[in-house]
Image (cartoon, rainbow, N blue to C red; front, side, top):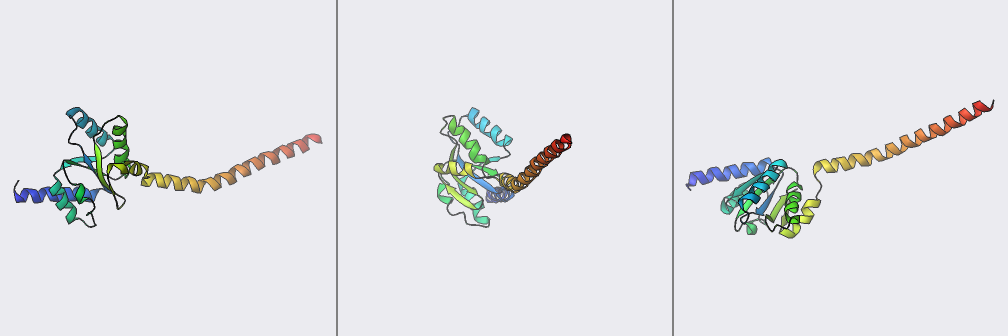
Length: 173
């Protein structure tokens, strides 16, 4: 590959990484064609961009970005696939489904999610437990609505009791 072509590829990888909030480095070299197609379809359905990248080019692309990615560099060995996402836990959940099926691959090498680096396949459980931005917003809204719902239900039940008392009193006369 010519030096100019490498520079273009590095720039493309860096621009792709800038578009997304997080990324996962995954080992996919041992997957057969059927499993690779299944993984690609699952990634497309979950709005995850899957790219197979050369380790040296990815390393150089990470060096051009702001931030410290030095913890990821030792994981750049063998074949590496890059899973880019805006939802931090989506790739982890997808990889977890493959693991449940008894598959050894794809295997998590490392991840960069919410400005935190996770290294090793043992981090898959922690990554899948991370709540997405939308899930956190839904939790906060539910917590804010809870006291209001209690007040409204207390007022409604009180109004029903009051109505029942007034109706009983009016029937006595």
